Length: 317
Image (cartoon, rainbow, N blue to C red; front, top):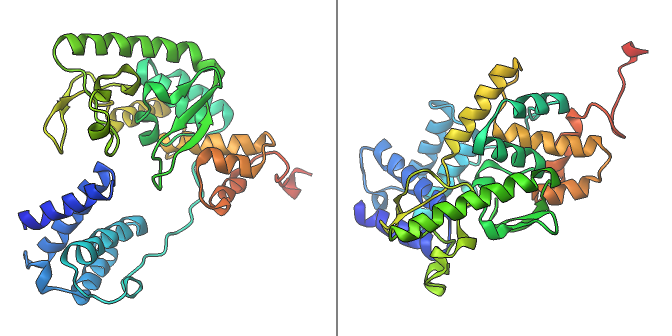
């Protein structure tokens, strides 16, 4: 199994998938094999795959997105590593995702929540709302991705491995400039101590051998401590962990007395909803969010409280 999993890792890296995808695929393949008492995948096929996917939905009650992720990982193993004929991919269980109405803050609630967050977490949460970013996208920002003169931010390899541009709030320019100065000081000290490398996207490390120590490639929100690269073992300074930002937001929501099941993604939902409420075109909002299909963006029209698509209750008359 260890050799097989190494083959999976190699194939994922050849295809320039993210480390997160690599880790997820390996984890699901392990769970699949463990479910059938460590039987080798070569000795199994379409029957076992469908049994496992059904088990996840019926016994484990996992979300549709989770079940589909497991399906993609297992099919990746059979189609790209084992090269085994298991039939057509459409023959395997595909969970239908339920369309849920997003949790959204009012503009007043946003102000209240953001006022109760401090330090680096405050700047991050302000960006999530002010630029409509996903948390992972925000933490992946490098210094070179921010253009103060154009008031824009470049999101590289976002969901679907696509680059896009979003707006950068003018009200955050001074705070971001201070943050970059702090990053510069940390980086200079790392260089003095013989470090200073950061992980580079895809194959850039081989193409630009010195880029990993360049200030422009440093994360805007660096972690306090360095850690080993999971693929190379080299000691590097990564960005802060997503969980610390999530905890800071949850604490702020509780302190605000807001009874909503909110997360960092709620700030992104609020960004989209408030833009639509303010009369901006839905296609513009779609581009800023990086949605492939405008129908995904349309869901925010269901939670609008005002604007051109608002409906007034007859009771209020």
